[in-house]
Image (tube, rainbow, N blue to C red; front, top):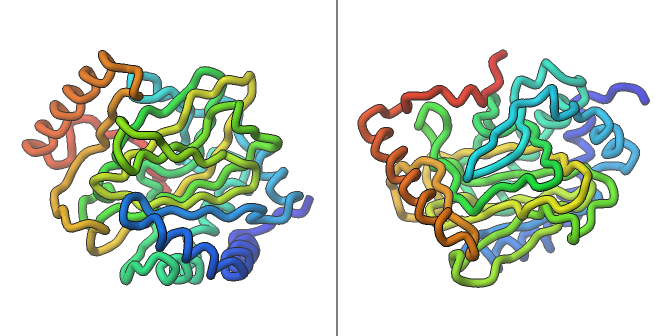
Length: 273
């Protein structure tokens, strides 16, 4: 297959989202009082989506994050991998797409992140997970507010019973979550703010869930809470002890950031061009 560039991919994404703008906007409007979200299926031609999946690096070539908080493979240094991954990832940062999503979500100022702070690509295999959490409130320089998370799934034949699905907890972890299937060729977009708890359920099959992710930022937060916060994790409803440990962990890291604004450890999860 001939290599396609980000401009061509962006045009395809733009056309697809624009064609479903009314229903997408309705979905976001109906959910925005808690965790606003929408998703778009069959985002790209199937042939392209399959090529993206085939281009994903093996786990051994990615960075492993393993703790009580999460267990997954991640990467942001996109020039280390097949060029199609970088082209597709940055296609979502095309100004026309950003403007369209800004219009859909009613966010006046919206900016993509060329540094891919906490964005990039991820791979989750059997038994891997991402516990319920709130995303860091800001970009890497703490200049802008994190407001949207864009997740594009490319694993063919993904079924809900495989696990590895996006979970939204609009009423907290004491209430039932909303599960969004990590369906092949689906783009899921969710709001991020001080109460947008979300997670990825443990992968139960011997297969890989592959995802391309972007964050959008804004001059103002989506909610009225104007305080900075670090990424904060909790236990799943059945994980009572883990929940206590993760609450203490979040409090400790937040305390450190109040003293050292940039933190004491460089996450390294940015694209260094």
